Image (cartoon, rainbow, N blue to C red; front, side, top):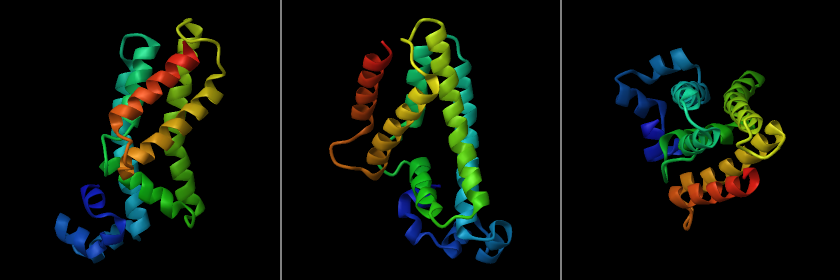
Length: 178
């Protein structure tokens, strides 16, 4: 992930990665079959770690809004070239030509984020913390908003940074759920 964030996928070769991790490029290809498979498995590994962290945040005591803010903070990249988001962008870019198996694995990753968000919003609505919304529809829209802002942060678009993004999302949530 660090090499992808630092150099970008176009400069990441199996030979360079092999040197970095002390393996031959042939060994890497033996285990991963292709560069795209290596990227997807790296993303799945990273998502596993984020999923565990997301699970801890969502299971924590406190208000639904407090946990929603924690979800958003976990979702939004730390800044330009955030390793996880850089990897996501590379995998998304390669998705156009991906096989059905790779697409299904990406859907599974996206689905986990979505299901957790839907459950959190439904909890907030049922407890009276949030106004009445359709949790699934609201989650889809919120994730689209988060994706759009997060891409801007990850690519370093001038005028968009993590703090500004978190402010925009907080304002949106206040207006939409308050």
